[in-house]
Image (cartoon, rainbow, N blue to C red; front, side, top):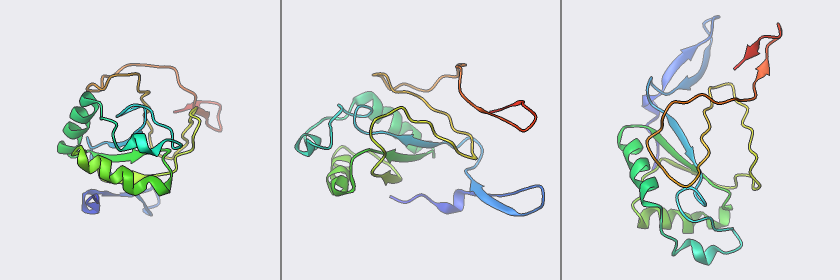
Length: 150
């Protein structure tokens, strides 16, 4: 399930040099966990449960909506590479549409993602809904003048 790279927009810096491409305005790049987010939390040590677990209906409804709206869906899971085939079969069995499946996310939580692009994080707490805009406190870098860079 590949993503159409032709949808990416070329970006140039102030010197006119080509930079990494961006998605078009209004298109989001969703990175979504699997266990504990779109289905019951199942550890890698119990893969037999991964074949029979049911997805959360509200998660599938929202993810399908995002996919159909043209957003990029990537599942980023702590499941190990040897569980890829089982995971792909489970996603297909439940007609869960996506573009990419990234395995081997570090286990343990407490993630802090540092990137040169804007990153918005949403912690899943039991219910998938449309996203709403709210303000929260976050950690950011200071720039060289001591101003907040976020």
